[in-house]
Length: 565
Ligand code: ARG
Image (cartoon, rainbow, N blue to C red; front, top):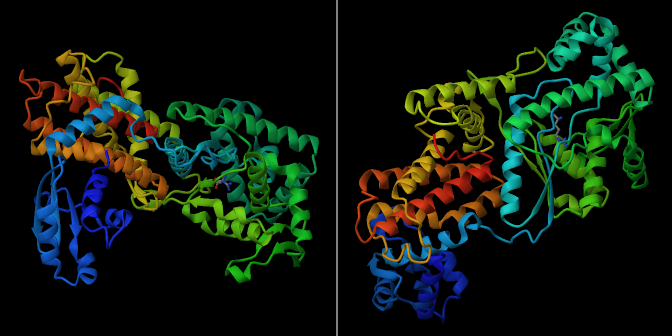
């Protein structure tokens, strides 16, 4: 329930000559300290209009306010501090969640509009890096959040399956490769070839020329080049799928860079017709000086197209195919300039819809404070990380709850959930260090802590063994301070979801689930929930609501909620 709405209505009635309802609503604040009430109105906003001291206005308003949801009103300096009637508000909130269940917090902001989300997008023949993991889990969570607020997300894996690196790979494979080895361990072997290419190319200039020539052959449809490319692609994709399965993440499209090969001529034509192509030392470019950006390189001197050319084709294709309301790209911060250029070129083409394209950048995952890179082969293999996380969580389960059924399955949900949660709990632009031991702890600000809180709630409900009648359960309102903190947090969930959507920031939800877990654990530590008195059902309704909201919060992040752990 939006109790700010009730408060705003009541106050507006008293000041209707000077402020509209919306103005009053906007002015309302949530005091930092609970001693100052649950909602506060700054009376100085009326001082000029009323030609009165704010203190006096606050006093007048406080004396007149009266509503069943308002317990008491205090004028403190220029503020009107309102304390809500805890029992009445708790009743209303718990009823609402019990009735709506997982749908609590759903909104219709998006009106069904399509939102393609470019996410994950690893490069063929290279391992999925921790950076791609970030793109994958941020994109997936954004898709869940967009859906929750009424959009229709379309998850697109824009695979890096085209580009000069395939020229390098073909050359390396032909020189040093071995079919059996690639089949046995595709990504490892292809990575080894790629790394070897780069180290040998440092002393042998001809290698890069050969690589360029092979990529050109590939673009011209040469049978041998195409055959090798297809083979590398399918072997790599199979490996990627293993990781997506572990994460429980699916895609609506795997249209990668190669998908746009036959759509490139049109892009070049469009640019040409718009008169924005220029030649620069044999290369074809779009000048972007007026945007303060480097020129966009559309075609190299040998006619080969580039990353941005394919992204132009992809953007236009997505607009035509999905008529998107918004188009998102969950891609690392280091590609910011690329996306600025992409939008600028589309604007030069006169496409106003480029305004609805949003790059969702994120920071780096570091280890010991250092950046990870593929070139030197120094890369954390994601599959290993996820397996290790699962093992570590199994170890903890064995210590804490050795008789748990389905231990292996729970360990997977906890271990993988821990990695995902850790990735999402920080503001996405922050860089963060990755220390697996810390990530899978059952205590502290971790995913397992939230999962554990939910499991604890469910176990209380199992012990209580009552079928909660959702219409009656909460009727004896809770009015103690610990419960009140929980109720207020529960009630803010819809607002939290909206904030996460507006900022494209899953961390808002992750942090919220941590706060709710902390508040609930405090409540639980100070309350005998199961004691047989007349508020037992109300307390159980609170437990049920917490479990519902934690599960839904975790679901929005793409993290599972095991029932027992
Ligand atoms: N494959 C690219 C990389 O690994 C990411 C692609 C992002 N998506 C896009 N439409 N450019 O760096």
